[in-house]
Image 1 (cartoon, protein in one colour):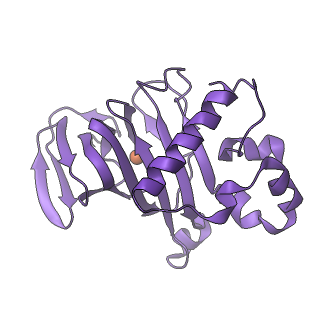
Image 2 (cartoon, helix red, strand yellow):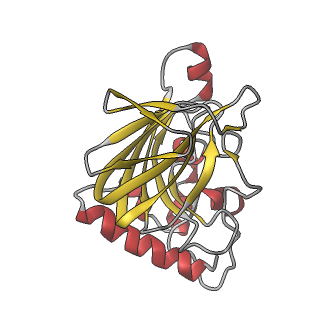
Length: 227
Ligand SMILES: [Fe+2]
């Protein structure tokens, strides 16, 4: 993706998020120079990979396959393994109308996917078989706001604003905005996007970036190179 496109997506996403009454933390608006200047005090941002995350899954077709994310908090895997402490994470995301986040599952992460406002959020789901692959025969059982619901393999749950679903590690899922753009909340177990996303198709998790103008803000995938 071109950096100019990333900058424009950040601008539009910020306006969409604010239009639903959600406000990002102050560091979201720091410039790359400000982040560098404050590097000594922001291990908690850099190590936890908090911040802007825009992906086209490496395919270069953001409008049809992509996702906007901002990670607002992310705990420590060591705490999760120890059985206490900061074992949680939170993201705010935007799926645009008919913009697919492709079929994937997680190894560790359980996640509540929440429609925080906008249009309908559609999530297609499968269970895993014994090898972790998509099970075409097993029905899918999930809890939606605490209510048990059962779907055929490949069934789609539709979430209106305010509704959510709990996806456990091993639940395959693919999602998109239906009828319009959707503001999505994610409350989950500690998140490691380098190791914990298993995609059905051989695709990447992060965008490749062409630097055609300076970044307005750094993406989490920029931290290694820029900071
Ligand atoms: Fe997921």
